Structure formats: structure tokens, C-alpha cells
Image (cartoon, rainbow over all chains, first blue to last red; front, top):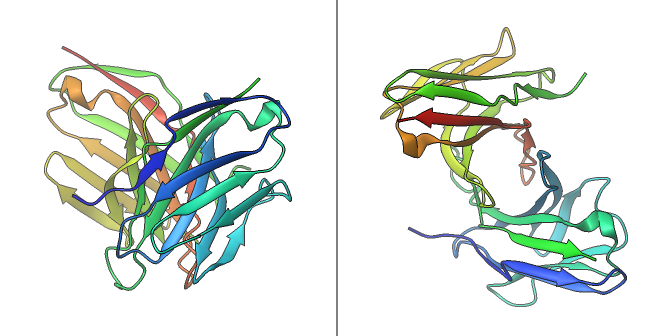
Length: 116
Length: 113
């Protein structure tokens, strides 16, 4: 079964450092997302991406965050200057909006980011 | 008022019991409703997806939506220890190119053998 893959599974970084989280969405999907989940809290939307541009972002997704689709398969989340409160599990997701019914969003296994 | 409310549990039931998990929501614009299962430190796994009021069944799982009451439920029949996980409800407004999901906090479920 096709799946969303994410790397790294776990990264520890020092406060102020830049981090890039990588994702390979499901191959025929057109819509890509990043969500995050702080330990013990709910899953929160960060950003959606379609046709090589951001289609929506939350208030969490401030100027320190950016997303990119550098080639035909990868989708990345960059955090420019990490803060302690960025420690969370980051989930990449993708969906195929072309079908009217069965509109589903599939999540990767997550990248656990620890900022120290 | 939170957009999506979900009882965080924890909920413990004996193996074989019927489990009922529930969410309420306040935004009438939500049209699409999903249930995800999340094991510890793993990604959400889609279980059920529905967009109309009524019931949808898939094996041991039944998703129920009541849009008039803004209430959704997930029923698990013949519960198994492998069903032990956190169950997340999620919903979204269908706009072209916009599928931002709003999640509940999740209910942690334990099935006791």
C-alpha cells in the first residue's frame, strides 16, 4: 500500500539551529500538508501546499517556517531558528483531491524534533 | 468554545466489548468527518471517512454522524487488544485545495484481555 515516508524519524537540535524535515508524499497525490503534535496535545495544522505554493497556513506557521517541493518527489519543512517550544512530532500528509468521493488525507509516521 | 471537543479518556474496556467514542463540534461548516487511530509515537492512521449524516460500516467499525446535533461517533464491535490506541476525530470544510483538518484531542483506549 502506498505510504507517506518521513525522515529523519528523530532529530535533536540546539536552540537557534536550522532544521529541515523531509517527506516523500504518495506519488499520485497533489496536496501536501504539515501538521505537528506537541507531546500530550492534539494534532495541529501548520500548512497546506498545492501547485507549488502555499494554499493555507495557520498562525503557528510564522516566518521561521518555510516549505518547499525541491523536486518531483520530496516535500520539506524548514525551521530557520529553532526554539524550545518547537519540540514536537511533525507529520507530513498528502491527499488526492481529484476524486469527488473518498477524499482522504494520509499521514506519515512523523519526525520527532527535540530542541535543547 | 472549542471547535472540536473529544473526551480524552482514558477509556478501558474488556476484550469483546462494544466501544463508543464520541466528538462534538461547533462549526456548522464542517462537512467531512474522519476517525484516525494513533499508536504511541506513530502517525495517525485513517480508519473511517464520511460526509453525510447516518451510519457507515467497515468491518468491526461503524462511524455515525448527526449533523443536526453536531455529534459524531465511532463504534468498535468485538474489541480486541490490538485496538488499544488513541482515537482521533477530525473534520474539515470542503473547499477546493483546502483540506485543513481540525482534530479533537483524542481518546486513549485500552482493551483489557
